[in-house]
Image 1: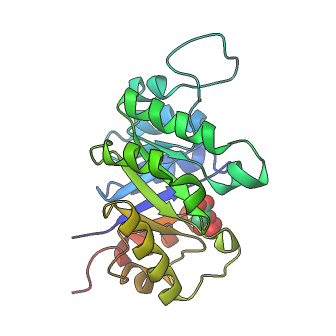
Image 2 (image 1 turned 90 degrees about the horizontal axis):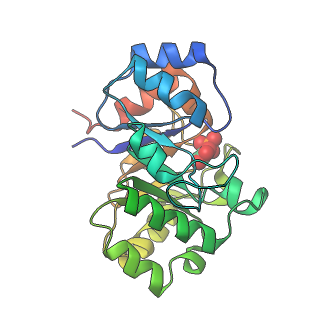
Length: 225
Ligand code: PEP
């Protein structure tokens, strides 16, 4: 079975790139995380691919929250997934506290959105008893993404045995929940990362903006024949 590939465009891309990707990709193990403004244009051009927003509001439903987009609005627009707690929001820009992330996770679950929850080496801070209960009750609607901060956008991937050890610890703590690896995944290293048995897929930033790179990563996500 193919492993999951989540692409995170971050604040990149253009309508031209949306066009090209919409014509190129239909894989059912690919989830494309686009800037919110591009989600509907993409959906209008390609009804097959699974789409992810890169965040949702900590406020629920509707209300006087200028600039916010709720989980419910995303779901009503045909979006299936939301990436939550990315380290670029959590620590670097300080946009997301642990409390906010958990509120967003709960909002996403209430709205019927699946979440890709990013965690790093300090996962114990986020994955406490309350969170494990939330994950246990999420009925498969949450996927974790282990993203060591030192690996995001740096081209430096930790030792494969270190990745394996940490992902095993995470899965042990969270009842075997599906867990991705993220951080400098590209067409060259995708296969060896995907070959780690405990890893259920990858979260790809920079390399996901290039069609040949993403195509090669998708190829690496299928078992070698
Ligand atoms: C990311 O955005 O989550 C990420 C892993 O980025 P990159 O692949 O560029 O390191």
